[in-house]
Amino acid sequence: MWVGLDAGGDVRVGGVHSGTVRNILLPHGPGAKVTVVMDLDKSTHEIIKQDSVATIETEGLLGDQYLAISFGSAGKAEVRDGDIIASHPPLEMADLLQKTSGILDSGQQAIQKPLKRRRI
Image 1 (cartoon, rainbow, N blue to C red):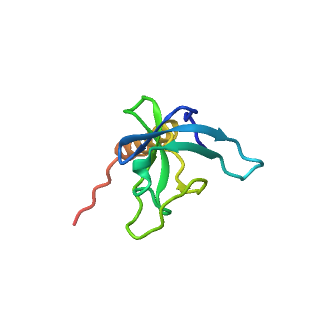
Image 2: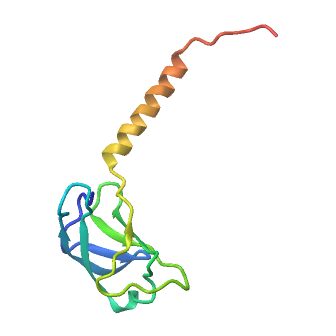
């Protein structure tokens, strides 16, 4: 799911502003994927390859979200207009906080259990 990403959003390649999100198209049915259409600078044509991956990143902890694209591997084919690259789902802050809370709770329970002593 592409939560928080909007048309007009920033696209960065290697951390550098390299384009904008033109449009976000909803899937045609359950289980289908969202399509993000973007306009990229010509300077990215030799860097973004078929094995590049797109992810949504957040500026700081609570900042604006942008689309980050990884560099591709040398020797892989360049991406052309209309090509599709892989993506990873964004890390949701709410999910991260919930998991962290669960870890802290189990750690707290472990600390509160009485320690059994054995003689050796």
